[in-house]
Amino acid sequence: MSSMITTDSQSPVHTRVPTEHKPRFQDLCRMELIKVASLRSTWLVLIVAALATVFINLNGVHSDLQYLDRDLAHPFKARPDGQEMHFVYDPLFRSLSRISVQLMMLGSAAIGALTMFGEFSTGQIRTTFAAVPRRDGVVAAKVVVLCAITTVLGLIVSLISFLGGQAMLASRHVGLPITDHDAQIAIAAYTLVVPVCALVGMLFGAVIRNATASIVSVVAFLFLVPAFFGGDKYHWVVRLRHLFPGDAEETLTFWHGPDRDPGKWPAGHTHAWLVYAGWAVLSIAAALFVVKKRDA
Amino acid sequence: MWDYAPDRHCDPVIELTELTKRYGEKTAVDHLTVTVRAGTVTGFLGPNGSGKSTTLRMILGLNAPTSGTVTIDGKRFADRPRGLRHVGALLDAQDIHGGRSAVAHLKSLAVSNRIPPRRVGEVLEEVGLAEAGRKRIGGFSLGMKQRLGIAAALLGDPPVLLFDEPLNGLDPEGVRWVRETFQRLAKEGRTVFVSSHLMSEMENTAERLVVIGRGRLIADESLREFARRGSRTTVLVHTPEADALSVLLAAEGAEVEPAGDGGLSVAGLPAARIGELAWRDNIMLAELATQNASLEKAFMELTADAVEYAAGEAR
Ligand SMILES: Nc1ncnc2c1ncn2[C@@H]1O[C@H](COP(=O)(O)OP(=O)(O)O)[C@@H](O)[C@H]1O
Ligand SMILES: [Mg+2]
Image 1 (cartoon, chains in turn blue, red):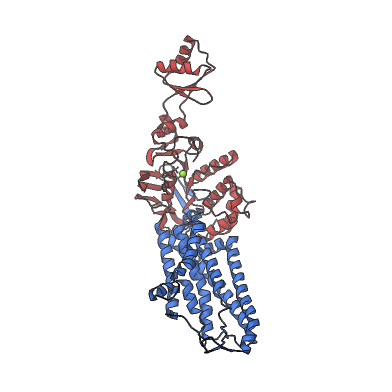
Image 2: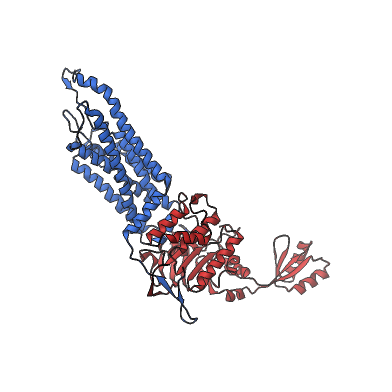
């Protein structure tokens, strides 16, 4: 394993170095994949979040079933104001539920943050940058690996939740087929919010660099801050609320059935997709910027 | 071993030019101009807080210099897409994620630089960690982490090697092994740059010394030249009547300092004269020994003004 030397005492020592293989981006992705795969905590968080999400969704639909038969038998109810109400079952509400997608968002944000603070808080990042001095390549590889893992996981969770839930509803004829337009958009949104939150988490991890502080801040950002923009008294408040990823997910998984009220000033689908894309792009760009600018 | 390009030679020299780093008001590295050459182990010596680690981090492009430049083989390290075949570095053995196994850690590094995976086993074998390869790094002792850091530095078989305080936490056998490894690497024509805050660690390791204090260059010369700087000879005296003797010697113009374990370290008077004075005043001497100028002393004298944290040697 030695470098050969051609040395005489006068001239500077010249060392023959191994051929430089052409650097490839895929090698950096493999490095990141090995890093993720070799940390048990990463898999633990992702798998627990995924299992819990699927469980909550399937269990939600399952417990709906007992009321469903009664409500479907008597779909018309008189409201106190004398109007007649027609019972319509929302096939998406439970099978792709809010509370469980928040679990996925939380898990992926934590994993995203971990890919950064896990390196910065331990000093591992210096070892990484000594091996790969060009930092943008490292960040880009982290983005690719993070997005790949969280998207695949999000898709599996969405599909199992959706198909499982609808299978249970099939005998009551209130389920949606996967060919349904609303269903497809909902599945895509339920899936893609996971990598979006992972990227947001990554940004928080890159900026804050500390485990607890980055997790607390990203959780506050995703779940606490939007709560300040609740209600529909002022349009500008609603507009601000529509800028958060969780709200965009809600918009996109909305089932446009009969008698369904999307609330005052609902956001459009295009707007919601742009919110996803915006956070993804902003997170990547900002993470690249801080990682390149600051001392490691 | 993998393909060698017969015509691709390099001159693995590290060149620091007016390298400066400020953290706010604090100047950690101050206009440092040094050339570190191949073929010898160069010691990078300075008291705690003198800017060694900061300098090494700037060499690796981890910290951006406030001003000045540093190149390796004529190029800024940060501009290289991949580093391991150019420079192997062990900055801090703790700079590692404790949750992985040593094998996974090294494999992730090897893969990123297109280094064949079998090198992982080879370097682990070389540093004596073959047995512990599958264990979590978090459970390693500091000495094992040092060895793992050295293994990572050797992965790419690089012509330049940087080590920051590599002897910390090693047992005597480990220290001997590290010294031999450094000397072998240097003999193979590589540039080996090793920092330490203890002269004693460098004495049997380095041939050249770069000494800094408060971020400034104090000396850049061979170990032998450096030793000559420690000109002051001192005499070690042990006596039951230390106080009386101190007063007596001080009156004769000597500098007297306590030398630990109750002894006195006397500068400015030869041993014979000290004996004569003690005899005259009926002071019994238990020991009277001339101490030749040591490297350690030369180092202490040179950096005396530059010591940042005077008490203790702990980092
Ligand atoms: N990130 C930092 N922020 C502020 N000051 C720093 C930082 N890193 C090092 N220093 C200061 O710079 C000086 C040199 O530190 P360092 O390079 O670690 O010295 P050494 O390795 O020689 O002990 C010290 O006074 C230290 O406190
Ligand atoms: Mg240091």
